Length: 439
Ligand SMILES: Cc1ncc(COP(=O)(O)O)c(C=O)c1O
Image (cartoon, rainbow, N blue to C red; front, side, top):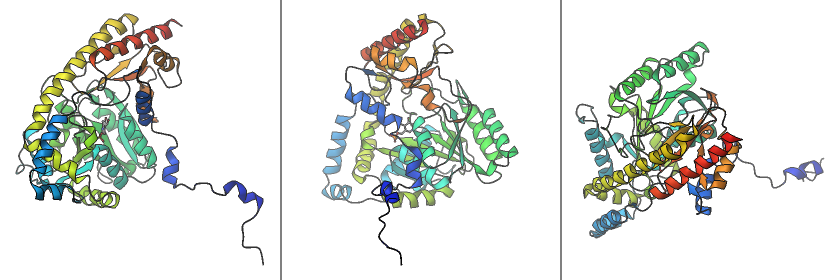
């Protein structure tokens, strides 16, 4: 009989090695967002126009103090707030979210045959995006995304083994005709059933700043419904920045153009409009996804932080949210003016540099002269850090497949720095760009 104890020298290299799941092994390194956040926090002298942090000084300390007092004024309420809640979320908060969505879209619950049963509260909207990926996608399944798109989602999809396929975007967001063509290509290749969803950020896109006009929203829903032949193709509408409108009229959500509420998943968040520290995101789900998402969330955490949801519900009930939003919009408007003014003053003279004016949100998407590599390993990134500014290279926002990446692009975020730092950051970027153009 052979010796049952594994003592062969050939096993030595395996001894004690971690054996991660295939899913954990797929992604490798730290997500770029964590790296950028760490760099920002660790080097206070640098102006970070990279991390998507929100305006710091206006975070809602006072509204939350009042909400806290409100909840604590009633001992029964306070005790409930400290207890577990439900997986789907705190009912008064979900009711308030439904009412706000319908009001913003100028719809009624009767007209849409809706109740708050379809509203799910999650730990930030990122959790909902992950849950949707988890219940929809098998390895090799496909999600169509803008080229460029929200880069954290690209990491989520890669982690699930799914493929992000990029389609063209323009100044009005994802181009429905490009989606149509990509779906036709998948059909011709016999792979239409692999396409499970189309992901779009409809307001003040991260990274391009674009807002999709109403007509295009209707068209996109129509394209998704038309191609839902081999199974439904969902449209995931990420509305994380809807409330950060600094000019123009609000546009009805893409969800409001979905006639039967079966195609569009509407994803919202209080992170950008109130406080990311509360980690409150939410979604309006088609009935077909409600059960699977809740089952998955139940396995994960059986409900997001109950206390935070009660505080947020109190903030809404006391009218503190809209009050806060009015002040926040004024601050972001000043920041948009600051970054556009600085770009005009410092970047414009370089020649061949361009950007689109965002009507809200936190991002300016910049195109540099053709041939300038703004990527992590290109000459501009290091030079910009040496001059005192960090940005997100545009290349991080392009999926590997589909419309090709443009290396001469970058994303500037004006959420966190104040106006003076924004101007300093853009000036530093212009110095670095001028240097790279000249060499
Ligand atoms: C487009 C977009 N969606 C979703 C999120 C996630 O935000 P949260 O999980 O804080 O709601 C972000 C954060 O930056 C974002 O930019």
